[in-house]
Length: 158
Image (cartoon, rainbow, N blue to C red; front, side, top):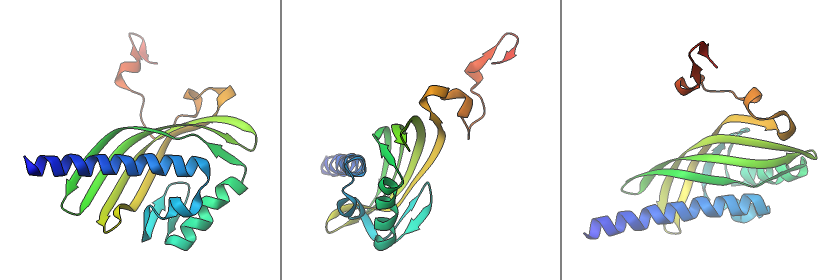
C-alpha cells in the first residue's frame, strides 16, 4: 500500500509540475519557468535549447517576438522508475503570433528527474500536429500524422 501511495504522490507532483510549466510560460515568469528544468535541462520544440542561461534567453525571446499563448495540457501518461519518470501528454494551445490569432495542438514527451527540490525536466519535448491561423481553420495546416482511419468515407479517404 505504501508503494502505491508514493507512486500516486509522484504522479500528482509531476502533474503539478506540468501545470506550473503552463502557468509560468503563459504568464511570462521566465526565471521561475527555467527553474523547473535541471541546470543542464533541454527544451526541444520550436528550437533545441539546453542549459539554464540558454533556456532563459529562448523563453524570454518568445514574448519579444510577439507571441502570446494559453497552454492546455491533458491526458497525462506518467511512468515512474525510481528517481526518473517519463510523461506523455497532449497540448491544445490558442495563441497570438504578431497580432494574428492561431490555434495549435501537439504532443509532449518528457523525461524528468527527482531532485532535492522535487521533480524537474531533463528534457521537455513538444511536437506539433498543427499550428495554423485561426481564420484559416486548423485542418488545412495539419501535419505530422496520416489521416485517421475514421476519416474514410465509402468513396475513400476524406
